[in-house]
Length: 307
Image (cartoon, rainbow, N blue to C red):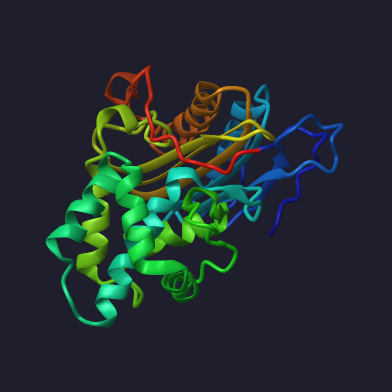
């Protein structure tokens, strides 16, 4: 049975038995904005979809800017989406796609990465090094990036032109697809490739380990990549994608934002969403056992065209 929830009514807990998917939809904006995108959640765990929908919506209720959210928890068969196909300038988040493309391309010729490639990949992910990214982007070329995107089913992602990889157009659906490929066996990325990507995303320097890890239990492994950039229109783009496993859960989170007045404003928006997701998935974990990101987040500033 599918429950439809009016934007003008209070959301009631899902009443389905465990194992049944219960879609829950409610507004991420005031009820009067009838056409506003809505947080939509489904879950195989009774009551979880309604709770996530309610709490994500509340976390965004006072935030300005445009926010897209994706959540998938394999353990409880839970998903949440908001603006799933809206496009955003990627900033440094695209660096995971660059690494995945490099490994996918190497797999096709059954070769290992060279010491140079390994050094560049490590710098690109763990420190968000822009020069390393440009070197790998130029080595691969846009044709190979497009080849990986096609193989991965990331059909709405558009590589940046003119060497501006940070202006690659990304969306929550494709970022969640990428995280799914990294965290489960598939024919696109080898098991060794997936383990290598997760290893680097798990070794991101502390100053760049903000965003989706906020509020993650200490028992959960954290893998993250963030990005930000500022443009003349729509302000700051601030994004975070993460994969988390442990404590009885296996989940991925993508939060993309733009229209932020400052970089920190975007970081705080993402972390408000992340905290309620981690809390709702692992409600018995104490606050003292959850990850608190740095109060001075850093990220590599991505070059964009003037004007």
